[in-house]
Length: 401
Ligand SMILES: Cc1ncc(COP(=O)(O)O)c(C=O)c1O
Image 1 (cartoon, rainbow, N blue to C red):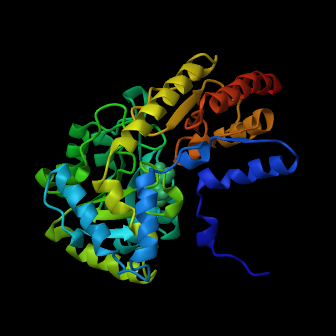
Image 2 (tube, rainbow, N blue to C red):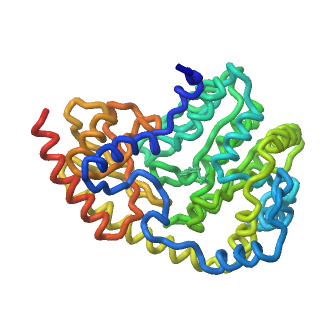
Image 3 (tube, rainbow, N blue to C red):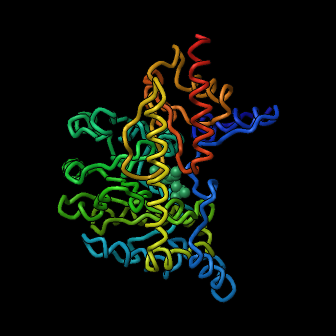
């Protein structure tokens, strides 16, 4: 028997781990409605045609061998131009490192930053790849809580109280997965100032910044300049341009002497994976500098779906949620999970309704707090069938306990 590492055992990524239960159900002949993964293509959305055409042309006419480990210059130039137009300090291609999605950026960056025993502050609930990477690196995640009563806004006092001499970074996810909330610019600014004071890196995950139903947040890279904070922004084309499987993302280092050595260390690590897929990097320029109408159209479409999902939640006794301002997720609160942990509730809900959602504790919420996250990218037929199933099953689940 070859035993796997403890590292692998500790690597928990609930959004995909929970799928095993759904697959087992499908083997028993049931048809599952998957509302666990935020992938627009799984719900029928298609990437913008002009990007596919540009990449198709590049495949035939341009260089598609190994690119530089930081990525093709033309892709980095496009990110730099896009970032500079956001405001703040001018970004140069040398401040950009192209990666296989924002996920790889998070992995490379944290690996370049932390030593065992260090601590990193994460939002709870928050996208779980960060805690998974940290446990792989034997680094402690310390959580600052987001609460629906304050519309999921971080508390400066709480973040401040968690900082000690082992703290290395604060992760911001703005807009948030799983809550869909936008952090107010004043709060981000205050967190950046706090980070500057304690010499902490701010890692700002902004993969949903272009998918807002309200005024989008100002990028942390723009606010970082006045705050004097060292920062790295993570972005990708997975959600905004529906190119999740192409694995195109990047990190942008806020230009500053403070991040110079970290940037070199991250690039050194990036050399170990040679490069991110070269072909997909040709999507960046048309996506960031080309026609932006597809993003607006997509945002309007998901706004309609959000409104439908929120209305359905409000109409089901025992369920509630806040109105998300961005992205395509709902954190649903269940008044009574019948004494179950949220994970057991989600598994029982799956069995009873054939609907797969993700338990709140998979994002760092308290397992007893009564949350699950669902993806509302489906059209009214899909969401309608899912909510009908959830509504009926809630009665069954309450009766069983
Ligand atoms: C907040 C957040 N960051 C990063 C990612 C990873 O995206 P990708 O690696 O496809 O860019 C996701 C995916 O769901 C996410 O929700």
